[in-house]
Image (cartoon, rainbow, N blue to C red; front, side):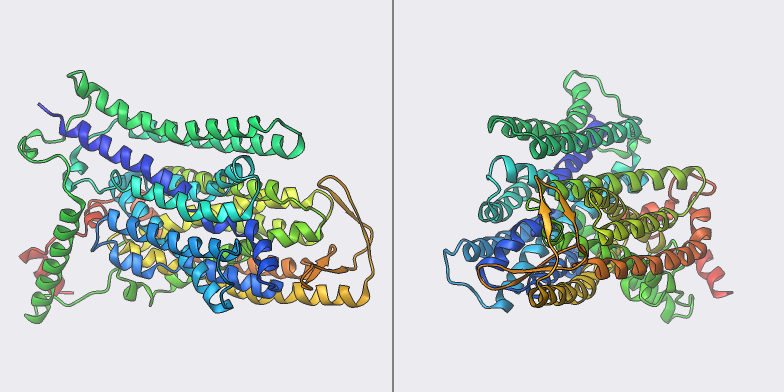
Length: 603
């Protein structure tokens, strides 16, 4: 007889492994620094125009309200298909323009294309995050840390492919961004699906151990990519060696499949290691996997039924409608009137908005400091970003279950260190770009692994897709204000001053620079766009970014003080979420009994 526990457990882990592949290919937005200079040269843009293209890309990457709205109405494979289509269209046409296979498009059309290409990430993120968090409700922080971590690590993965297989050609990179994520997501949609609600009755004693195994593999992959990047950057290697590095990287990515295969091995051998909590609750004639569409329909019908019953009770005077409290399920419009929601939003805005400013301008920052090849810095930020996301999720998960410490404590710590990273970028000391990149990547990654589970714990999972995607708007808003308006404007101003004054000079070595003057050196590209060269090209920009992060620290402190009681109620007595919290995973809420209605009526 088939063992439902083993099959359901394998389904969850196959889905998580496929989700990791999707996220590893979904970080196309982090590759902007590799082809932004090509855009600037081919289309004759200045830095402000290039930065605003980066803003359009960030808007597409983070404004996913439509995906959040549809995640409870459509199965995951539909969301993945939409993401594949938008990525292929946006980056595919951009590749045609940059490779000059078609005539250059107007500026607004290029902005729309990058918005469409970046928007693919919102569909990927929503599909895999919502599905996997519901499949693993007792390990939200760990799941988010792994999945969001792979988005950060994807830049290092793409960088490895870019340098070893694509000969550092920006045109080939854009083609890869159009085809690669599309193929991966179309293949992964076969495995990423919600397990039926009865999966909550399956006892998986190895879940904690399995997550430790995946975390170890992820950390090993990150340090492997770091070592490979450093070897390729500092040593002259045979052309075959980087290709071997890439092949080993692929082996790391398929290693997590060991877990679902191991779960099915006892079944294949005739012995099962997983037992349902109530054996009679499983029907041997019932399919082990419910189609994702069926789950979505049942969930929508349940939502409609619950809402209709509540409205009827309100109309009869049996119960007065009450707003949810922190820790319960909020709709987006209910969350928007809460101070905690806006504190979390602006805290996230201050951190990731300043971080994405450095990411979008990294090519020009390296150029200003005398580094003609910024591959190593992109890889450093990517790997540190991954470690920050993974570490932030695991660290916060450990301390809320042992001491009920709010996750936002670690958000405040990350923002304090981010202040120092911005000051390192502003100083432009020899070697400071290396240290600043690592520190920035770590702190930037922590923001994502903390914001996601914090939002789910404060406002519930029932409407999490909408709430998560609204909070994510803080990223492109920060990009618009800090990168598009401040950094781009100040850079062009400094470049114009340098062109007029023409003072200051630099000595360039193999990947290093030494500044003998604080004044910019003005020069021009072949198309006449001013280039700022000097220590102070981005100095004022990053001093402003450090001040913004200081404001974020204050906001985080206020938020932590306000929500500490929520974590005491959720985790102070039990290391697991409450039963009502688990019921919200599938859009179900307990129906009020007659005694409950009478009790509510007396309040």
